[in-house]
Length: 346
Image (cartoon, rainbow, N blue to C red):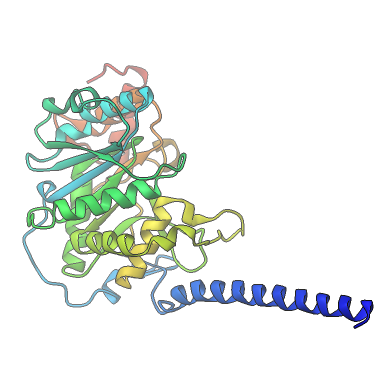
């Protein structure tokens, strides 16, 4: 065999290896695309509105719901992910001194920190005995990945799914960020509405994000699931560790959305239940300066990006008067003007 023939054979072999590798990558990519195309008949999202852009009306998807007892705050489990950091501690204190005071006697709030957090329950949550609801702490052994929460969320959801497996009183699980201020009365009104339309089928609600071409996902500041949806997500996460390696690009083509826990949870919910998320615009994912105060009879469920604890007290005094929710944008605006100028105003 001549030198030239040897070179040609080597080049041909290299081409075959490269071609096979390329085909393998294409097959892998297609398999991931197939997992989404299998639910291509699903709406991108649902809404209570009859015309809501990409979302279809919720009643056209959920058929023949069952009537059961009306949901109350006592049927809710709140989940907040924290870590050992002084700024986070200040925000936790603000939560306890504002909206947490307004939840039910049997409402559960679970704080999830890291397994290597050396502090005791009392050191992490010194105000837990000052509120009437049930407060617990879970130290997650999940793998850390910088500012991302995927493994911690997956581990906590599986832990809580088992913890509340036989607790028939707990029907909704609501995840909130440390810089999210919640209006419990508005939240439970939304949950009642969702439960009436969806029970006994799985449901996930939140504020939609539309940066992914195939479906909308619920933004991280606040989203919730009924028990059937929550358990389905926890089970899927326990059985499909390969999802952490999947790549799902934004519409812009930049950034892997699967790196973010909110996208991951909505993706898993859709895969596990074959149901889209329910969008509600009263779940505010920014400050009042961007989204306003809501309207008469339609108060916001929450606000987000309250990076300073002082803001929690301002929002709380603005929206509540003698423990009652103040409604109507004009009334709230007038109160806000007073409170913002004088935080001690009551």
